Structures are given as structure tokens and as C-alpha cells.
Length: 324
Image (cartoon, rainbow, N blue to C red; front, top):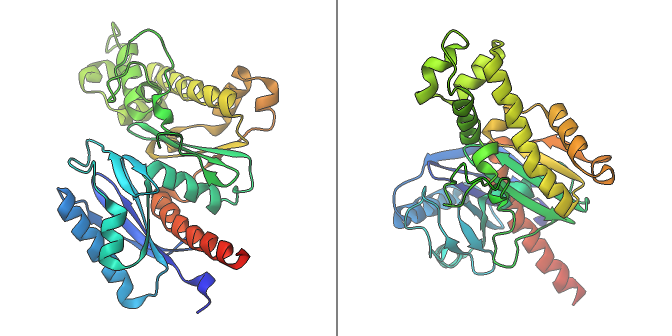
């Protein structure tokens, strides 16, 4: 087999599930494997090793890439900062453990960075000067790709775009304990909070949502907006404004060629409306050629990006070896 066609194993580790598959040419080969995320670092590592062993039974692989929540040192492959969804994960020397157990080249990367890398290269955008992925879900995640390469920052926290501060009012407290982070407005939780605020003092005669105010969900708002409910439509319009505010800050700080919008909330976003909002709020030179693309990889973005990072790392080593 041509070495350029040998795949890598991509593994996306989340708080509730682990998604894994073979990756080649920045695409997923076949159907991914999905298993529940076990509790505790030792059990997670055992599960990852089991997944790798399963793929190795029938495949030759160049390495394994692991996408994980938390702040990651990509050089050592250690998880420097964990997430509440993976208790005890902070401090795990994941790259060293997996390499020692499998003898496979291993890359460990933050999940949002992996997803951004996968989306950028799967869509053929690696030649662009700056691509920013915005993941709209329960929170807001993201990744920044500069000339095809991940921008990680001085402390490996580059791309933590959900924590851009977009208000000085101290109205909404973020899960990070800071106030008025972008994700407290532009995430699913943000839409829920906006709906709750709009329903203050509103009667059931004005909207059926008033009866649900204390147990309001994002889906309630989406469904009501689809049925023409005025309050719900206003909440959804404000949601687009809130998403745009963070993107405007990114436009004026990084001047991107394009954004890629992904995540569970992205299916509720009107990309034309979002682009119009950005055009109204950014310098003309910044917005006139700015593009906004939907995700092309969906939930497989993290594992595809992680797997491709391994393949590209191997290719880079070989190029240096040939040049030397």
C-alpha cells in the first residue's frame, strides 16, 4: 500500500461519548465507532487502548490522533486544564501513555482545535490566510487556523473564543466564573437566558411560552419561533445579534478570510442574516469579501482533525528528512 494512503486512527473524546474512526485525506473512512465515555482517567485510557487495538486488527495505521476537551500542551501531549465533563483528567500525560502502550506515533490536541483543523482542510480552505471555526452548542468553542496551521497561543488557550467579553454589565455569569462571556449570550444556554429575560412580565395571553418561563428550553423557543410566536422570534433575532457581536470582535482582531459555523445550534442560524449583521457592524474592508460556511464534517470534525494532524505530522517529518 502506498504510504500516502495509510490511514491514522482519529479519536474524539467527549464528556458523554468517544467517537473514533480511520482517517485519510482529511476524510473519514467508513462508519465511526461510538462508545460511552467511562468514568475516571484509568477507564478512559483503557477504552482508548481497546479502540486502537480493534482498528489495528484489520488495518495498518500510521498513528493515532486524540481530540480531547481541556487545554492541551500539543508538544508533551499532557492535559493541562480539564473540564467538568471529565473529572480527574487534568494532568494526564496522554501522549506518553498511548505511545508507550501502542508504539504508535500519537498526537493529542484540544477538541475545538482538532475540529477546526479538520473542517478547514476538509473544505479545502488550508490555503487561506485565516480561517476561524465557531462551534455553537451548549457553550461556544472555536479554533483559529493561520495559513493552514493551528494557532494555539502562548499558553495553549488560543481559540477560547467563547470567553470573549461582550458586555460590561455583569448580567450573565459564565461557567468559567467570569461575567458576560460571549457564550453566555451566543450559545444554547444564551438563547435560553434571552428568552427567559424577554418573558419577564409577559402573560400567557401574549405567548404560550410565558407558562414555561421557569423551565424554558432552547427547543421551546425554536419551535415557538417556527410557529410565528412574536416573543420567540424576537429571542431568535437577538440570538443572531449576540452571535454576530463575538464574530465582529474576531473580525476586527484577526481579519479572517472566512468563518466555519458548526455545533448543535448552527442548524438554527440563518447564515445570510448573520452575514448581513456582520456587514453592518464591521469595517467595510473587513466584511466585503468575508465568507461564512456551514460545517462539512458534522460530529466527525474532531476525530477527522485529530487523525489528519497525525498524518500531517508524519508527512512533515518525512519532508524534513528528505531535505536533510
